[in-house]
Length: 243
Ligand code: BV8
Ligand code: ZN
Image (cartoon, rainbow, N blue to C red):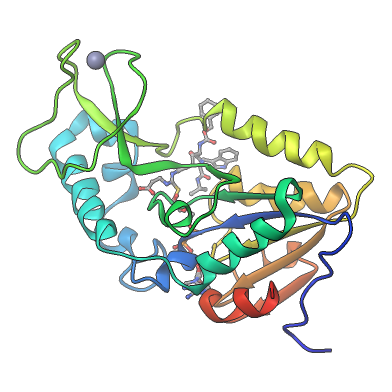
């Protein structure tokens, strides 16, 4: 069998996609857990947790400001484009849940998209409940403060130990509920399956009858949960698999 034979997406088949840092790696954004990944230079607890932010908000703002500046120079790759194309073909039979915070899926044209872990170019106030707002500024040195309450601004990112946005989880749950009794596929691309609740999606979808496909550079922690594994670079594999 052709390892890149496209899954049958005709008729009424639904497709739920989960992407991770490996999809953006092809655009030049470092992943988290690969060699010289982001977590090699920083302890997760120091830069991606509420405790870390409370202890040293300047360090956290430096970490996210550097990523904000780097991501602003990056363009989507063929993997992002392939996902935007298949969304146009499937319409409401498609949903993309990304763990990535770099915004590249939206730049590539994805609209049926939920950002599970937030967005690099959005900030919110840690001191009041003003709505999150677009913020492309790199805050080096000075700590940005809310012009309403004077509280500290923070990146609108889901840190470890923080709950995901209930609205995001509700959109994923609604899509999965809509697949009941239908033929559907869960496709994960470029993710190490290390972070929950995102990493738990494959088992949940498989138990509910989905075909499960993984596109990854190497076998991740939860590789055994997938019915089909296509090893390779997401920028090469996704355009061919989803053609
Ligand atoms: C929560 C923001 C509860 C930071 C991130 C069970 C249930 C619920 C929670 C937990 C649980 N068990 C443990 C927990 C706690 C924790 C967790 O999962 N810890 C892990 C480490 C064990 N989970 C949480 O804290 C979550 N919160 O559930 O809270 C709660 C409930 C109610 C009330 C209060 C609390 C929050 C998790 C979100 C954390 N934030 N991001 C930031 O981005 O700055 S997670 C972070 O890791 C990124 O978002 C990233 O997307 C994510 C996963 O990493 P990957 O995307 O997979 O990237 P990685 O580098 O790991 O892997 C890349 C893969 O790509 C590799 O496999 C590589 O081989 C491959 N690859 C590389 N290049 C390519 C490629 N593949 C293809 N092509 C290529 N070219
Ligand atoms: Zn405020």
